[in-house]
Image 1 (spheres, rainbow, N blue to C red):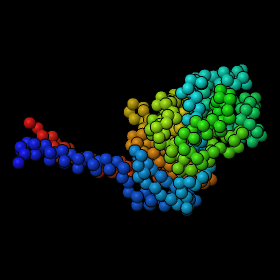
Image 2: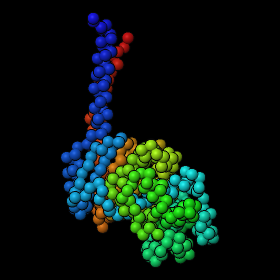
Image 3: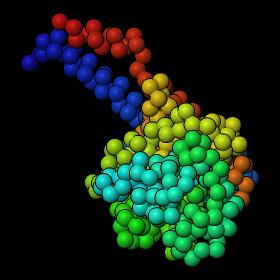
Image 4: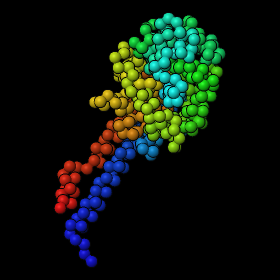
Length: 369
């Protein structure tokens, strides 16, 4: 039995549409392994010959590479990657209504209830606008104190403000140390216990921990591996869910990814020093790019030893470059060059697999009554 000519045309059109759609979907998850491996080799000197790279797009690994024997479980100090992890923990308390981003720190910590420091808010702590600039002085205080409580009390007593709270951005460790003490007070548990229960456990981050757990350097003291960091990024990419378990609300993630430094003077930015990029800052993460509506399209949290996790919202791509080097500037330059190579590969393959306008018009004409 023969089919009507118009019905055959419709079937043919649908089949051809599938053939077109399939490579577009696949093309969204294709990169040239040879090109990216060559790029990685070009930076092996900056990485001291050791690196591990993992890229995932829409729950599918699209690139994996290694230098010097590093693998998914290689644990290294990740420095300021810690800021993203710690901020996520603090935001779980915001989700539960136990703290508010615009609460003054002094609401929870009596030592911050007098003088200009009484104006410091939780938000200031997470976006580096507390007014505290003395990084070296903070390091000395951190080394001399045994608990987070003692460390933060000493900050309040001894560390002078260099600017009015909320007015100037200075990237550093002090604010997160203060915010971490707030959640200890609110919860009655240590920072590391809260982290284990609220972030590491739910996200299956079995190899992630903080050095000096009684007095962790919240903004820079984490140790982790590529597997764990990808689990964290998967939670972020899935709107706060990890394997169906709610870790963070969508609202919390949107707030973290929102430009929080618009109109604020940028006094110190390591990204500007290393790669001459004036990135704005969200909460616990850098905003690498925004669209025309000022919505973030790429966010990250690189560390001083070179590890670089990122989330490219526009392509639903998450990735980690895991390294451990002592030259932040060289490592950051290498990370950024590698990041641009990834972006080029993704956009190139999407463009190559996009159907042409004339053929799309033919399909429409074929099914027209």
